[in-house]
Length: 87
Image (cartoon, rainbow, N blue to C red; front, side, top):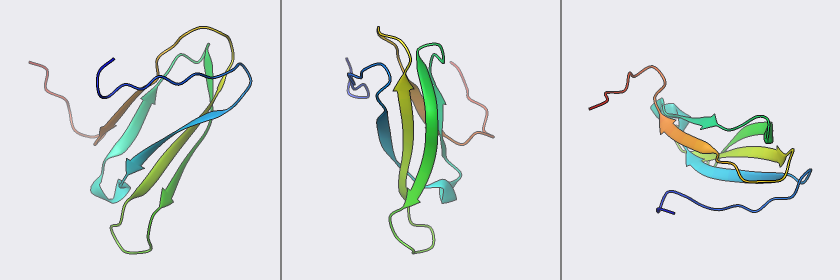
């Protein structure tokens, strides 16, 4: 497991959340990829940490496991309109 990975143990039918720092005023957005046969995304919410213009906050993704087993949730913070360069 590298520094960008975290193991979460959940139970079928019990919600869990992933909370990440975010600042949509920069144009960056969290993209989430997951196996919808194993997890259901129940909600995605952004909460500002201050009323100051340009201030960041937190993005929360709430999931419910549908089956037992292991799966991976991939989250990337990027500007969706920029093309990626693969070397």
